[in-house]
Image 1 (cartoon, chains in turn brown, purple):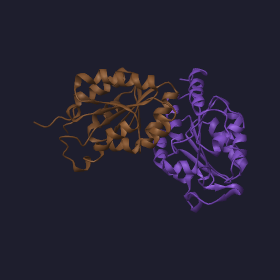
Image 2 (image 1 turned 180 degrees about the horizontal axis):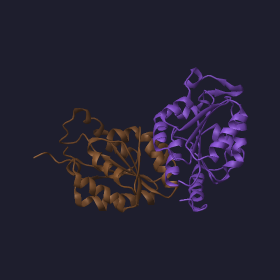
Image 3 (image 1 turned 60 degrees about the vertical axis):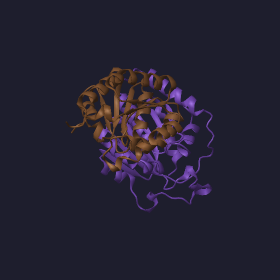
Image 4 (image 1 turned 30 degrees about the horizontal axis):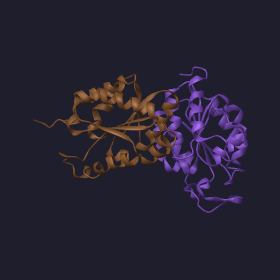
Length: 172
Length: 199
């Protein structure tokens, strides 16, 4: 599977570097290594969700207990979690770091992934959720650190959109 | 069985527990017994009280967490029961008040009349679902004495436990809560983070 192991590790190390101790997730292809690395790390609590909205609640509970957390999800997972993001994170001013694999952009071969990606940025913008793309390995560590800093200072959700160029390596 | 009587029965024991409730009648009635800094009332996002409780329980394994849920909320996050069950925090007690109606979002009316019922009114058994989801213990209670015994046993125990309590669809005397959501939001974690070094 041509998901980048090296860049998944980079993202994981950056999350740990900013103090993330709990990750909640649902898998999708681009996230498989990230989730596996989290699962293999005895210092990380991995919560396997049935649906993404739960993760918003789990992260809120972690925040109440002074534990930093992150959610790993995909475009449709983000869209699924909207009510929780509004009714918990935004309403109660709770930090939430979302790492969203951003499917459906240039290069997408799976027809079923081509719709959800179109709405992710407009919905993030509609909710005034700060977001940035992660495309280059050298940006991973500083952008994740800055995203976490903003989430904690603004007591708000923030999103990093993991791009194809970072997460996927076309077979040669 | 009345919800308020159930709450009264366990109120003294909630002293050192992190308590997360759903919105509406449950929140208002617990509040009416006397607000405490260790009570967090989730006034929206139906279904996520148990997810918040799970997050706390995983991050503070030595702290007892009591989630006070309702049938309408649980039915909005049935998958959450499976997440809870597989995470299996030993320090969490999941109380579900089942009044068979969406009382607090307008499904109930004075006098206990139910005009918008939930599926528990037609046979859905939340204790059986919790058990089948993988909760090590789950039971349905209909009498106050049974509730008190089961709830206190669960809170004093050392296992994920679900107690579904069939209660009347009665409105609280008042929905008034003189603690702002944001005040509650900051007060609660301060209590969690300072009381007893439970991490």
